[in-house]
Amino acid sequence: MSSPSIAFVNVTLHIPHAGSLKDKRRYIKSIKDKLHNQFNVSVAEIDKQDKWQQAVIGIVMLSSDRIYLEQQYSRIEQMLGEYRDVVVSSLQLDWL
Image (cartoon, rainbow, N blue to C red):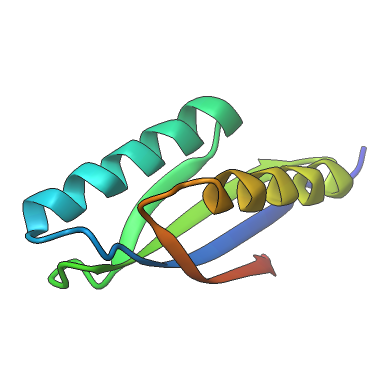
């Protein structure tokens, strides 16, 4: 039996059209819900909660198959790049 792999993805976002924290929350909720539903991952906003147009979200994935997690990371990266109203400033994958 192989040991489980844990992937942590740190995503920094710029939300240029958010004019308030309420606007920002709407964008972030949409992204979090889509990530959770499509990839079965845990997602949370982990920094910049008080900034209207900035956000940092953390994504955690767990599997016994590291290659599968790498594939999921690529799919997540692609999905985030398809959002028209949100700009991905940085995306970092760390193994725990």
